[in-house]
Length: 153
Image (cartoon, rainbow, N blue to C red; front, top):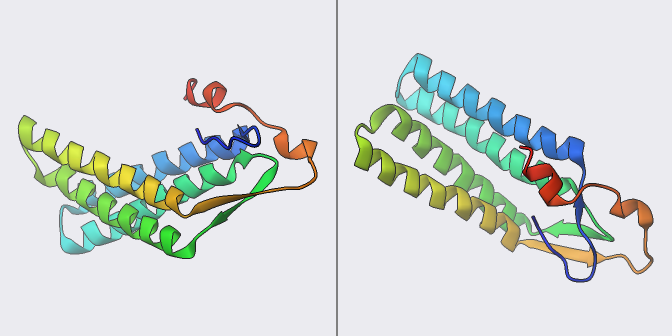
């Protein structure tokens, strides 16, 4: 979850579930492409692009699901960099999925991918600012707390 000290933050359930579905579908598509076409350069680049853009889409759909007494603003440079990181991480993950064999190399590849995905997330979040509304808008606060959405997922 994301916290703003000056206002409660809730999440729109439909958009949050949509972000989960997007992530599952794009990773499935990426894995299918490299599984079906192999680890060729074209397959890895196209699968990495689809998967990376989808993972970034999942991140920003999830951010758009936040409800608060304010407005989110994102720095375009941070957003662009986070998308580039997502595409590079997805491409590397797909390459590792079909190329890396053995427990220790797979563990190492998994750790690198975890750092890359976390880097994408925090890069995107680093460019985020919240502009609070001066007048309290009760409709902006409708939604579910993060825990009630994340735990069932």
